[in-house]
Length: 120
Image (cartoon, one colour):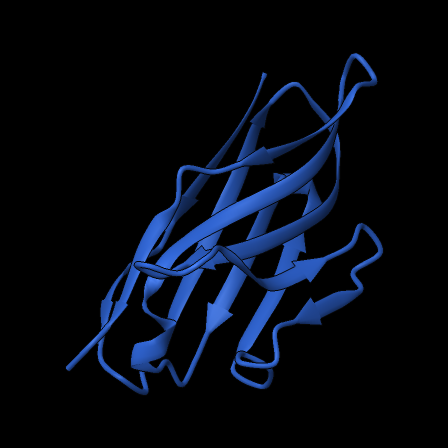
């Protein structure tokens, strides 16, 4: 079984920064594509940023130039550095990973989410 655990959310003022982390544990052989999604109240979950196993990145237009996704494969961890935060960034942020497990099965997994609130 694979678990993804996010951390680093919280309350921050507009213009501030936060760094989210997502630690993968369990029978992970290798993490393939990893990503961060978010869901604001009353809205659909949306892709924020993704990173491939080769470190190619992709960002939603709304966060380009402000957010940076990175990963540490040795630690099975993906990060989201968020800067110049805006109230519209307020949402629950979810980690998503495409994982090959030690029994050579490939599945996608979600974390439980971490709340980010941008408010003065």
